[in-house]
Amino acid sequence: MRTVTRARTIRHALALRAVRRPGLIALAAVAGPGVLAGLSDDDPAGITTYSILGADFGYKLLWVLLLSTVALAVFHELGARMGCVTGRGIAGLIRDRYGHRTAVSAAAVLLVANVGTTCAEFAGVAAASELAGISRYASVPVAAALVSTLVVRGGFKRVEHIFLLLATVFVTYFASGILAHPHWSAAAHGLVVPSLPLRRHALLVATATVGTTLAPWGLAFIQSYAVDKRLRPQDLALERVDVLAGAVMTGVIGFFIVIACAATLHAHHRSVNDAADAAAALRPLAGDLASTLFAIGLLGAALLAAAILPLSTAYSVSEALGREARIEAPVRSEPVFYGTYGFVVVVGALVVLAPGAPLVPILFLTQAINAVLLIPLLGFVALLARDRSLLGEHAAGALGTAVTVALALLITATTVGLGVLLIR
Image (cartoon, rainbow, N blue to C red; front, side, top):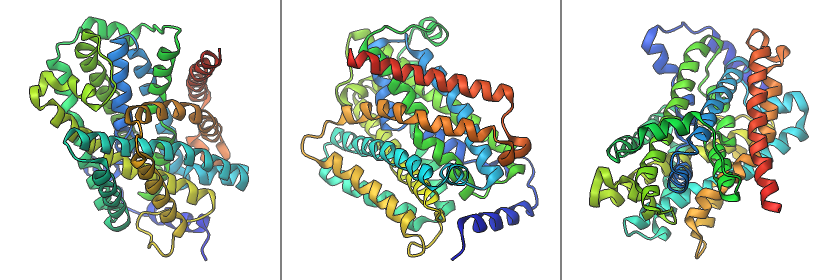
């Protein structure tokens, strides 16, 4: 059987022979990994986390969102760069550089993080359907079957196009944020002036914001997806545009969710205990239709992320075990890839279907766990990105390394600070 390295090498060599495409056509051909990885962070867990941030703290913690968005752009660019240059996903590179055991350990961390976040995506499906009066016991199995069929039977281009179409649901929050008449000067102050009450809840919200914006699965997904899309070093300039666009859209959507909730829920001293509370932020836009509009947006975001999260996990586990990882590979030839995908979907759905499963805590707390599990992955990305034997001229220089390390240390400090407050 062909080894993964040989398969990647052949595919990458063929890609390098292709004729470069001009202008917008080239950008359209390259676009996808950055936008999808970015917008999928604005999933139900992200919407819930940003809603809690705005409802509980108003505009004060917007700087955490800004910092997380900058980190998202930096680390996703590194992931896309490594995928384009090496033709390998993050787990595959860890396997090559640090051995099988280290790669399996890294994949295990991603598996835990991704299963937890997949639970959050199906919790989003359940919350959206219950707003519409449909039981989670009907909606969640249908959603699980739908996303599985999409990926297994859809084909790469069709899957990507449907993913991008689902991402359009976020437009609702742009309008709601503006129509809520937020305090724009307070929002600007919250973006640029750091302020963090040294309380458990504030640090938990800040940590969850980091974990939902710069999620572990996103780092793995963007690199593996760039490889699966057969991008090459010549595509790097355009792929950076794709990554930056995805990061900016993620941050802007999060910003409008926060200010919509700050101007509505926080102004009336309301918190977010369920999906109906979060839907209240859309009332300036939709009035009595707020719950319906929120349910539609939440469902679209959930389906997008519920398809991508297991896909990211399947990439990582397959790469760690030295297997090929491709959407278009036949199911029988890649049992590890599709088996992992199915496992994550089934476990995520079953957890949410457990009687009495608390939807908002699942959506919110999994993101704080993400921030903890993110730390070792950031270390691997920082080490691999500066490896000249691996990336050659595309390796991170002194400035890039300094920025990467500084962001990783800030994220680590926030997470450690939460741990200290929790055990006191």
